[in-house]
Amino acid sequence: MPHRWSTADQAALTSAIDAGDHASIVRLARIRADLTQTALARRFGCHPSMVSRIEGRQRVLRDASELRRLAGLLGLPAAAFGLQDRPASQQFPPTSPRVCSSPAEENDMRRRTFLVATGLLGSGVAAGSAAGAEPDPAALLARNLEPVLLGPAAATGPSTVAALRRHLSAARAAFDRADYLSLARDLPRLARTTEATQAVAGGGHDVAAQVYTLITRALIKLPASGLEWISADRASRAAARAGDPLLLAEAERIKASVCRRGKQHDTAQKLVLAAVDHLDTGRRAHPHHLALHSVLMCTAGYGAARAGDRDLALDLLADASRTADRLADHHALHGPLTANITSHQVSALYVLGDPAAALHYARSAGPFTGTSTERQGRYLVDLALAHHALDRPGPAYNALREAELRAPGEVHTRATARSLIRSLRENRGTSLPGIDQLAARAHVA
Image 1 (cartoon, rainbow, N blue to C red):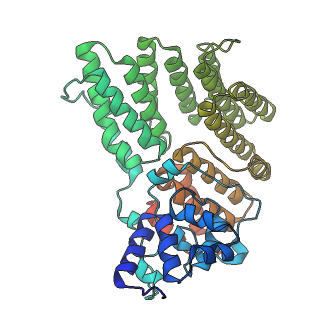
Image 2 (image 1 turned 180 degrees about the vertical axis):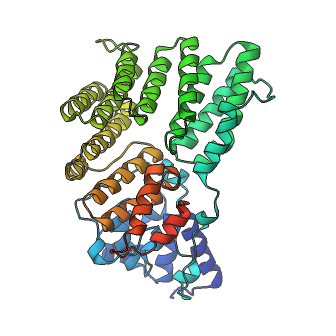
Image 3 (image 1 turned 90 degrees about the vertical axis):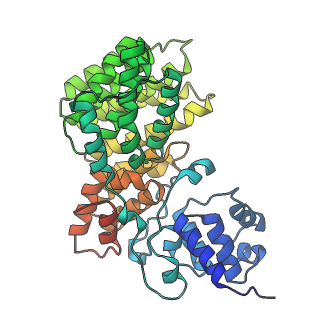
């Protein structure tokens, strides 16, 4: 007997779309369309077990073209899966790279959709994104961190080092999933508590180094304000007091990134090379030393690209790749390192003025896997920049929307993404449906 679609069913589909719950969307829309799993699989061109795994959250679809085709089969607009309904003239080329993440990361992503269920299920009225009502994460980060870095020390009680480490772990997880609103709330309190703990107990220097490094990484996403110089200096000082070579190297790497933003390219490269000296990369090197060496070479390669030295940039990135290859058996390290190298290679080629090569490299590298939500967002924004540099506003916009689907906080916070959105919105020669709404969600005036 055909399923009778009720108001409760409609409400459930509405909630699933609002939550970005693809498994429930597929299951409910399939039932609404009066399709069995076998029938949907036949139309989609896969085994019925794949539909069962999708609905059971054991398989997550990432490819935008597959999601669009599935939406069509289920009688849904692509927006139900958080994708733009775009004309064929603005389709991604079939060789565009895909960005993937683990199912666990998928559950952590708070992706937005751009039509409410009334629009999808009959009224035809589009609604504004809930994200449009969110505070501006960039403004909150700057406003909340400024008194921590410039003002007098607040009266905050100390904590235990173990508790500080737990709070630091939570803050790093928020950064990795590009949840900058949480960081704007939690980082200032963590920094003040860490300072108080150091003053009273004389410990926690390693936590302080990591807290200020994290603060600097967040501030680098915003327009330059000078605050990043202060936090980078505090990270270096705390790392020196802690005496941990890994913390020292990472703090110097972040300071180099700040110098590079200030166009002090020579100083930045000196800092990165000095950071390498803190690490042991010999035959019996610890895997974490090798991993950070690869990251440092990526930073140095991107810095060389910013300075306009193509040969040095590519040599340093090749060095990063060789080091990562030494960790091929350490899967927890090798996957993120490979993604990091791909991301930096694309960024370097773009800033060297060769966006076509950047996109070609991205396609040849294959799916972008095994890394954080934050890195996925950065990578997709960089692809959007490359498309834009080639005067391809449609693909640039699609890459931005894909970035927002996977890492909304990155698009809504990062100054580079906001600038690109502004540029696309002002390009009235191309129709980009939803660009004004995207600008509103990203707080682009």
